[in-house]
Structure formats: C-alpha cells, structure tokens
Length: 374
Image (cartoon, rainbow, N blue to C red; front, side, top):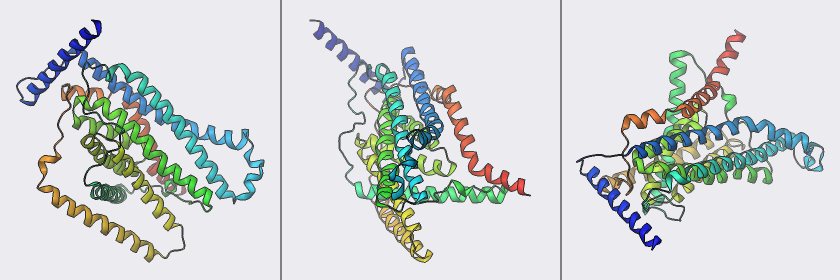
C-alpha cells in the first residue's frame, strides 16, 4: 500500500512539473518555488567549490608528490635511473607524478560532487528522461563533427595568438614562452607514459566531471545556462590564458553535443582526439624535420579539417530546426539575475582570482625580468 501511494505521489509531482514546463514553453507564466531557488544556490556553491578544490590540489600537490617519488622513495638511487638520460628520467618522474596527481585530484573532486549533489539532483520527484549518460552513443555525423571540433580548436589557438600579438602592440606585454612545451620523451616507455598523461586521462576524467556530473546538475535550469557555466569553469580550470580560449570553446561544443546525444562519449572521443593531435604535432616538432616539412604537414591538416567542416556547415544550414535543444522535462525556472549572482559566489570568485593571478604569470614574469635587466 505504501509503495503504491509513493508511486502515485511521484506521478502527481511529475504531471505537475510537466504542466508547469508546458506553460513555460507557451510563455504564459513562469513559476519557481523557494525550495527550487535554494537548491539552485546550493548546487552553484558545490560546483564552484569543486573546481576550486581541484585547482588547489593541482597547485599544491605537485612538489609534494615529486619529492615523495624522488627523495622519500629514493628512486634516484635505483638501477632504474641508468636506463634513461637525466632529462628523460626527470620527465618520466614528472609524468608519473602528474598521473598520481590527476587521480588524486579527480577522485577527491568526484567524491565531493557525488556526495554533495546526491540529494539535490536525484531527489527531484520526477524521472529525468533526458539526462546525459555514459552509455555509448554517437551523433549520426560523428566524423564531420569531429572535424568541426578540431577546427574550433585551431581557430581558438589562432585567436589566442592574435590576443597575445595585440597585447604586445598596445601595451608592450610579451608572453613568457617558458610556459610552452620544451621537451618530448625519447624512449618508448616515456612516450607511452606521456600519451597516457595528456591524451587518455584528461579525456575520460575531465569529461566525466564536466560533461556528466556538472552538466546534469545544471540542465534543469536551462540547457544554455548549463553549457555556458560548465564551459567557462572548464576553461578557467586550465589556468592559462592561452589555454582558456580553446578549452572554453571546445567546452561549448562538447556540452552541446552531449546534451543533443544524451551521452558523453562523443565528448570523450573529441577530447582525446584534440589532445592526440597536439601530441602528434609536438612529436613532429622535436624530430629533425625542416620547418618547411612541419609547416606543410600542419597546412594539409588545417586544409582537410577546414574543408570537411565547411561542407558540413553548409549541409546543416537547411536543418536549423534540428539544432535546437529542447528543455528537460524537469525544467526549473530561475531568474537570469539570480543565475548571474549565484554564479559569481564566494567560491567561484576566489577560484577566478587565483586562476587570473596564475595566468598573469604567462605575461608578468617575462616583463618583470625584462624590466629588471633594463
């Protein structure tokens, strides 16, 4: 009897939510209860604290892990060191430390999110029929969309370079190139380890956090809001001005496809492909190829993805209606001003300030050193 009563209550709540959603779609009236606003505020604080926590772990833990591997475990005294050159060995230790750090930071972040969101997201009184899942599903035009994603990355990188050039012209500010990649592993073990570090792990871990947990937590407040919020947080987490452009841009694209397909797998594959492309061009850059050969390879790559992307964009112009995202069944209206206010909560403001200060090192350190030498 109790189970039947609970099921009946859930159905009534579900019907009530569906009715309110339909009224919202017809623009007749908009309603949100006080409890809905309270849940929204709590969710925004939790997401902001999660990215702040992950950022702090990444900033505080590297030295600790490196010292633990090198000094506490005494790996420098082992026979293992004689298999590699000093630079190669240091880079292998660095990648091992990065893998451990990523596992620690992501585990802490995921546990924090799942624990704090379990009552706020799951207990809605409705069955969420269109949440993003981790079941394997790709869009029909997966290959052209992957090309579009790669093209977005390259355009974002060009925009970043233009931004740097503009800063140099207007304010005589130069980016510190010491933040760029300066070494590529030479041994098979080092290359495989580096591939796992920058291609495999970020693709699965970051997409699970941002395009599964966070996106699902925010979808009920509007797909556009969920896409923008998760993308901006994702871009800022990369903590570099040059990385912010392409991380945010690919975040928008990945979140849109994730909502459209109700699966994170396209985002995972695109993320891995983007990082694998970077990995490949880094490999070419550290080989004994002439600059003309390297540039030719890059131009051919750009031409191929640009042509495919352009053709696909022309095709979908006639299918604009298919691009529209329908709001979820449990859509909850929150005023835009409240969304903006609680997006910039204390935790997110601290996170943004720390990231901006970190990003400024790309430009500040180079110019401070230049002024000292003057």
